[in-house]
Amino acid sequence: MVLRSNLTKTLNAFLASLLVIILVWISVLRLGVAFDFSFVVEFRQRIWQGFLMTVAISLAGFVLSLFIGIVAALLQNGKILFLKYISIIYINFIRGTPLIMQIYLFYYIIGTAWGVENRFLSGVLILSIFEGAYIAEIIRGGIQGLDPTQLEAAKAVGFSRSQTVKLVVIPQLVARTLPPLVGQFSSIIKDSSLLSIIAVIELTQTMREISALNFRLFESYLFLGLLYLCLTIPLAMIGKALERYYNFEG
Amino acid sequence: MRIKIKNLSHSFIGNDGKMKRVLSHVDFDDDISTLSLIGPSGGGKSTLLRILGGLITPTEGEVYVECKSTGFVFQQNGLFKHWTGLENITIPLEKVYGYTHDEADDRAKELLDRFGLLKDASKRPSQLSGGQQQRIAIARAVASRPDLLFLDEPTSALDPEYTVEVLDMIDELKDEGLNFVIVTHEMGFAKQACEKTGFLGYPPNSHGARFLEVGKSKDVFENPKDPLVKGFLDKILMW
Image (cartoon, rainbow over all chains, first blue to last red; front, side, top):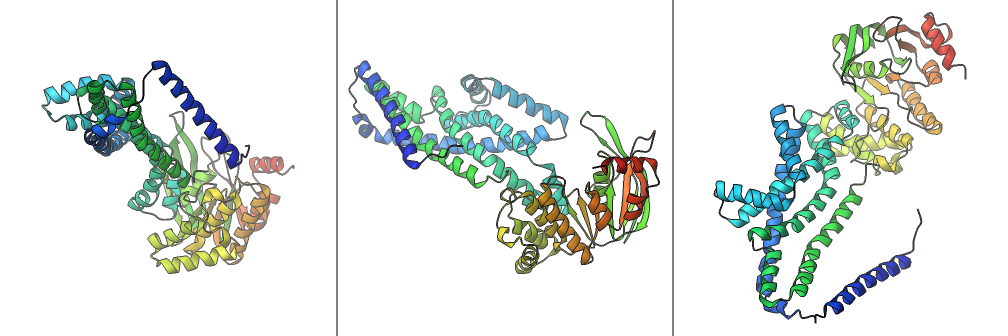
C-alpha cells in the first residue's frame, strides 16, 4: 500500500471537485439558464415540511423494515419449512422486481383492497416491505458469518443459552450488520423519493410541485439533490466510523 | 483423575449430507494426570476431546470424567472477538463463576502478568499474535481454577516460535499440578511433557476410530505394540 501525504490527498480531492463543478457549470451554460434560487425562500415552509416528511417516512420505514427484515431472516434460517418458503418467496420477489412496480401494485392492494387511506401509512408500509427484503439479506449474512467456534467457546466457558445470545451472538451480529444497515437507511431515504408517484407529499413531491409552479426545474432538482446529500453524507460518515469501530474480525 | 469411556461411538452429518462415523466403540479406563491424544488426521481426536469436555453429546456410549470443573482451549478463534483479552477472562468469571468485577479483574491480571501478557490485556484478539491469543485463551481456561483442562491442537495454527511459548506455558501450569488432556501433533511435547499417550486410529476394516494404543508416553513412543501405531510413528518421526 502506498502511503500518501495529507497534502496530496487534499490537492486531489480539490482537483476532482473542481472538475465536477466545471462540468456542471458548462452544462448549465449550454442550457442557457440563469440561476435563480429565490424560490427557496419563497417556498421554505413547504420545502421544510417536505424535508420533515421524508425524514419521518424514512425513520418509520427503517424501524418497520428492520422488524420485517429480522423476522424474515429468522424464518429463512428457521426449521419450519412452510415459513421458510414464505420468507424465500418474499425476499426473492421483492429483490427481483423494481420498487416503482411494487409501489403501484401494493398501493392498489394496501390502499384499495385493504382500505388503508392514509398515504403516509401506505407509503411507509410499501417502503418497509421493499427494504425489509434487503435488510433480511443483511441479517442473514450476519448470522451466517458468525464463527461456530465462538459459539463453542461460549459453551466451553459455561455461558447459558441466554447468556450466549446476549453476550456473544447479539454483540457480534450488531457489529457485523450495523455498518451495512446504516447504508440501507441511506437507501431508504433515497428510495422514499419514489413514493412521490402515489402523491405522498415528501421532499421530491414537494419539489416537483414547486417546479411545476415556477418552471425552475434545474434549480429545484439541484437543490433537491443537496437536501438529500444533507441526509445521506452524514450517514455515510457514520457508517464508515462504525466500520472502523467494529473492525475486530481481523 | 479417572476417565472412563465405555463403548463410545459418534457419527455426524458430513458436508456431503451423508452420515459419517468418526468414533467407533471407543473404550478407555485409566487414571491420568496429563494425557496426549495423537493419531492421524481425521481420526476423531478433536471429536473425542469435545465429548470429554461436554461440548458435544456422543451418539452412543458412556463417558465419565472424575472432576468438578473443566476448561477448554480451541485450536484458534476461541477468544471472543468483540472483547479485549482482559474481558475474555473477566466476563466469564463474573457471569459464570459469580466473581465480583474487582475479584475477576485481580484474578485475570494476576494470570496475564505472570505470563507476560499484561501489556496486551486491552487489545482485542485481532490485534494480538496467534501465540498471544492462545496464551490468553489458556489463561481464560485456567482462570476459574478447573480440575482438568482440555486443549484441542492449541499450537497447530501457530508459527514455530509461538508454538514454543504456548507449550512452555502449558508445561509451567503442569508443574503446578494442572491436569490436562491435549490433542496435539507436537510429538516431542506428547512424549516428554505428557504422562500418558493415547493413539486414536482406524483399525483395519473398521468404520470409525478407536484407541489402538494407550500407555505411558515413553512406552507408546519407544515401544509401540500395535503395527499401525508403529508405522505411523516411524513415518512421522523420520524427520
